Amino acid sequence: MVHEQSDVAGYLKEGEGNIPADTNQLLVEALKDQVIEFQVAPLARIDRLLKAQGRVCASNRIKTVARAQHNLFSLPLNLFLGQRLYSLGPANKVPEKLLNDKQQLISLAKLFKLLPDKMLGVGQGRSYGELLDGQISQIDRNSVLMRPGKDPSVLIKMLARRRVDFLIEYPIDMNKEMRKTKQPFELSSVEVFGAPGFLAGRIACTKTDSSRRFIKLVNTALRQLYQSDEFYKAHTRYLDTADLPLFDRYFRQVFLPAKSAN
Image (cartoon, rainbow, N blue to C red; front, side):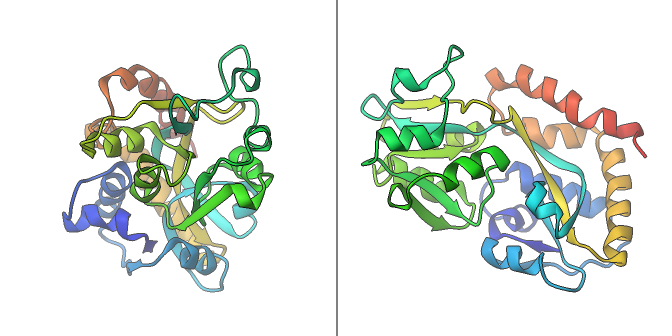
């Protein structure tokens, strides 16, 4: 099993915990009878390993059509409220003419075509989901600043220092990082039309017979975890109280049907 360093920190009790580390830990404990070798690797190398031969698995992967060509995916391992486009206002607020009647951004590509001097910070090798990945690919490269890895703190600090004008992030990560800063900021955020309200991380493995057997064991363990208080708390301990009603709705939608799935 391959992990990024930020996801392993929870196992090692280094720094603050997070949803991926806590849910990974619960799954590892549920699979304690299995022999699993762990490696830490940067995200770009994980992407390459998951396209290579041999059995390699990685945690906290978003399932996309492109990735499914190379990988097998488990049931959801964790759940995050959907990503939003953030900026430091009011100078970098999204123009009203690019918002629909639900106050959602119509298109990232249209935003940066209208504001070509603005910069979007992006994690290199990170998937933001199929819709946002597609829109980011349409933005002029001069308007995109890529930084390696998926650790949100790097790009959030760059936004706070105004080295980028916009970034796409989960509310949970943005709120956590912004609380750490001593300087107050007027933060603006907007949903992107068509982007999912939540994203689910999964175990992804290369397509081998042994991987199929492993994914089956993972799914059995996950169905049992879905029924535990520990699994629910591994998510909610990191959420703001205001986000709990929406999270509970998505939690029931994603995890409860899978309890009895084959």
